[in-house]
Structures are given as C-alpha cells and as structure tokens.
Length: 187
Image (tube, rainbow, N blue to C red; front, side):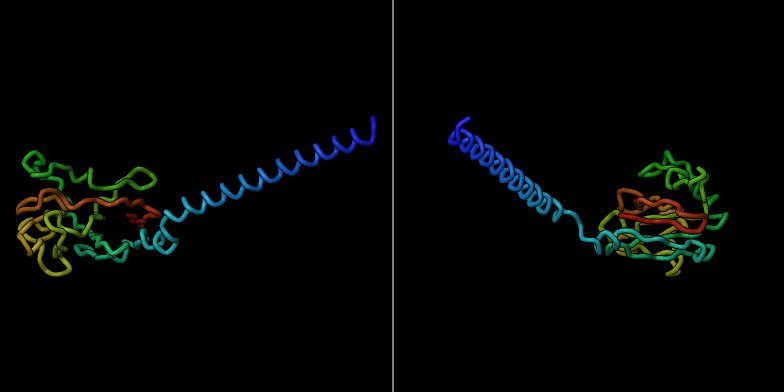
C-alpha cells in the first residue's frame, strides 16, 4: 500500500465518522426539540395537583355534606342516613327522567364492597350549571337531596333528577377509595 492510498483511506474513514457523528447529534437534537414541543401540551404540575383531592369522609356528619372545589369545579360529599339510603334504593327507576339505580352511582372499595352511606357527586346542576343547595344550606327540595333555586330542579338522596328542567342526574365524578375513610376525587 502506498502512502497516498493509505492517506486517502484514513481521510475517507475520518469523513465517514464525521458524517455519522454529525447525523447522530442532529437526530438527537431534533428528537429533544420534538419532545419539548409535545411535552409543553401537558398540564403543568400545579394544574395536575389541583385536579385531584383526597377527602376524609369520616369528617362528614351523618345526614350532612361537605362541598369541595377541585380545579374550580364544585363537588358534594354526602354522608347519608339509613333512611336516605332506603329512600334512594326504593325508587322505581323506570319513572325517572334519567333512570339510574342508587347502586350504580356508588364506587366500590378495594375489597369490592360498597359504602352506601357516602355519595360523591358533581355540585353543578345539569340544567345551567348552578350550584344546588342541600342539607348544609337547610334545603333539600321535595325529595330530600338537593334543590336548585335558580330554575327549580329537585334531586333525590342519590343525586338523581326528579323534578324540574334539569335533563340529567348530578354526575358522579371519578373517585376511588384510598382507605375506609378517604376517597380520592379527580377530574
């Protein structure tokens, strides 16, 4: 092998290495840039943290409710009495505007059992988004649940629409039992 041929081979190997290295760096940079663009569409950490809340339901008095805000949206956590549970379970769902059993509105605990005493619902009337009054405000409407004074919608002890212009039941949010006394409610 002559000196010129050896030098040309070394230059060609060096050139190939530089092209591969440059291409790899450019590809890595493009991938990082793309990741940054896509990642900016995700909600910020403070927004994600504000979109869920652990609620200690043992602090809700029997027959009462607490109202909470998650991400600016109201939610009701109600501790129903045995008579309220019985009233909710005895309704003929076929006559309801939005038929749904009381049991379908509850979420099971980790062991599969239902805590029928605790009901978690959205706190926005399904008519125009007003916040209905309930036991904590001293007005439970004609069916013992919630009453929306803005347009006269009445909800029962399961949050089902019974009378008035609201088209559907108070929605049941995503929630799960963290322990026997704590539920995690998320948007």
